[in-house]
Structures are given as C-alpha cells and as structure tokens.
Image 1: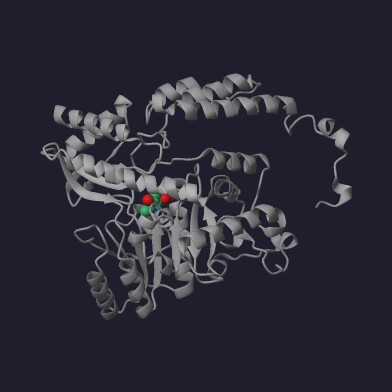
Image 2: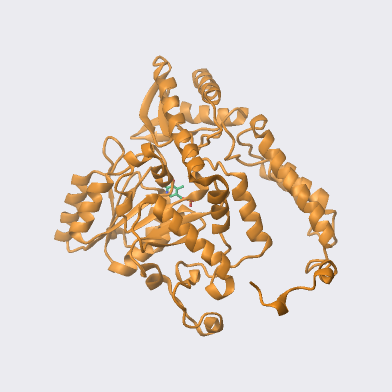
Length: 478
Ligand SMILES: *Cc1c(COP(=O)(O)O)cnc(C)c1O
C-alpha cells in the first residue's frame, strides 16, 4: 500500500495534470486511445478478408507518408488514419490464418493489452529500485516458463527483443563461464547464431560447422570426431549449440545424446528453441523435445509460439549467477539507484547488454493469467496437428506433390513434382502477390522446396486446401 501522504487528492485528480508533457489534453488522449483500440480490433476481426502480406514500393509509401518536416501540429485523427491504412496496411500479417511463411506471429488480445499497459505506464525494468513491480513480474514469468519447460530450480533468465538477442546473450554467458574455445553447430543452425559468434569475436577456427544428417539433425558421431580433431589440433572445445525445432524443417537435434556428451566433456550445452521450445508444453511436442531440460542455456521466442506481439525473446540459464557474472556493471552513476541488493531483488540491467529496458513480461503474465496454460497448450497442439493435416493432404495427391520432410512440430516441407528451385520461388512470390496466402520457399540439400509453418490455431483445413490448390496451379503455370 502507498503511504498516505502520496495519496492524490481525489477531487483534485482530473484537473491536476490536464495535459501531457507537450500539451495534449487528457480527454483527447482518451478519445484517440479508444479510436486506436477500434482500429486494432477491427483489423483483427477482418484479417481473413485482407491479404496475408502486402508490400509497397518505397516511392509510393514515402510519397504518401512523408513530406516536409512537420513544424506545426496536424490533426491526430488524420495522422492515425494514415498510419493504420497506409503504413500498417503494407506489411505481413503474421497472425493471418493463411500466413504460413517464415515463422508466423499469432498474437493474442490479452498480450496486446499487457504490452499497451506497460508502454502507457512508461515502464523501465533496468533495476529493482526503478521498477520493482515489473521486475517481480519478469521474475515470476521467467519461473513459470522454467517450470513449464522442465528446467531445474535455480534457473535464471532475462527477456530480450527476440531469439537473436537471446542467443547472443546465452553464448556470451557460456564464454564468460568457460573461457574461449570452439563452438559446434550445423548447417541448419539459425543464421543469426553465426552472426552472434562473429560479433562476440569467435575466431574462424573456433566456429565448427557440421553438415547435418539426412534428417537435418546434428550427427552425434560427427560431433564426437570434431571434438577429437580439434583437441588434436590444440583447440579447446567449449560450446555445443543444438537447435530444438530448426526454422527450415522443425528438426530437433538429438538433445539427450548431446547433453550426455557435453556432461562427459565439460562443455556448455546451449539449445536454440526460439521456434520450437513452446511445443514442449504439449504431450506430443514433449516426445520430440526430451532433453530440453538438460540445457545449460535455453532460448525461446514467445513472440513466435506463445501468442505474444513483437517483441519478446527469452534466455534461460540453469547455472545460478552466470548471467550476472557475464553482464554485471555497477558504475558510480548508478550507485544511488542500486546499492547492495537485498535478497531476491534483481537488477535486470545486470543480466544482458541492455540497460534501459521496457517490460516484456507484463504481456506474458497477462496472457498466462487470462487464458490459462490449458488453453495455451491446446492452441500449440492445434499448430502441431495442422502441419500433420497438411502432410496428409500432400500425401493424398502424390502426382502433384513430393513430401520433402514430414510434419515436425508445426512445419512441413514439400515440392511440386518436376518443379525446380526457381519455380518454387516464383510460385511462393505469386501466391503472396495474389493475396491468398504466404508461404516460404527454401532450399534443402540443394533441392528447391516450399514450406508451411502452421502455428496459428485459427487456420482451418479449408485454409490449407485453398493454399495448396493455389500453389499447385501457380507452380504448373510456370
Ligand atoms: C526466429 C529464430 C531465431 C531468431 O529469432 P528473432 O526473434 O527473429 O530474433 C533464432 N533461432 C531460431 C531457431 C529461430 O526460429
């Protein structure tokens, strides 16, 4: 409870600050705020009738949205309309039921509300002293995620902008704990991890890239041989980077075998579960993801498969204190807001490279509370089933389709029989331009392929059928 002297005088409240820092009246903020809610809800209700993706040209967009530097005020209603109907109408709708490209972002209403609330309250979760309430929410959410994914008690974490920032953070922790050494990954590891290794200054001969096996997984025997050959060459193995759900095919590396090897050799076991980790909330996903709980560090991306708007990624580290050992800073000018931290107080600025940081936890907390884990689990399960349904549709028409990789935690890849790389690329582009749906074209072991990622629980069987029918027609026309 706030102390009585800080209670605002009730009747004085509406008149005390009638405007914001730049003079917008409070009533105007209410009016515009409700209009923004309507714009957002209307878009979500109508998304089925709009294109899954729409890309404008730079000249058109800049001429409609730009102009001279605005020196004088313009009506906010008009500007909001321009933003909603021009700028925001030209983008991917990652929550569209026929958006199957890259990784969809099937965000939920409650998550949006949590995001807005934090922004409206101008939250900064750098230190406990400056943001104790939202810092507590972040600790709570991190522990809920830890429990749901089965990581050990004492695991610590931090929320970041996404998988790329979260992986970079985890790799920095690994190196801070174990010192320099070789990192092992495969040709299916996310490209941003290679970039992170480069940014962190891993020399070329400390990045050991293994060709993936026939199922696009990390081959454990090749890993073993790589460790031996590096040791013989005088290099020190340090870190194995496994992927739990590759972006390309949903493949999951052999986590238990890698965990055993890392334990035996004293290596850091990192898992990039940016895409796939939330599947572990379901029984069927768990079958593919056993071993996840043995990671030294694990990354997941709630803005992919936990129904959050952008952005929020998450790093979990099972060694207590490791995040702080890697990132702690206590300069003079922050002393007055920090001091010696009593038990349980966490300064999140000491857990990553961010100092000022907004709360990414409020929306997750509100999502878990509003829908409950049972509902979220069903929605994830539905995404897994939809890819299996797509696989059945593809298998039922073998004259048109060739299955490349079977449905794996929400991803299926396939090719149009007789079509090459270029035809798949063009078909994917033409499909997006038609407004019907968006899929990704990819290359798997040299073969051009198409890929569906089906994690939006609103997708129907008809959506899948319509998308495949249109794709087949487009690919044949080439
Ligand atoms: C999406 C993804 C990333 C990158 O995450 P961002 O949120 O886009 O930064 C990393 N790894 C995997 C496996 C991914 O699917």
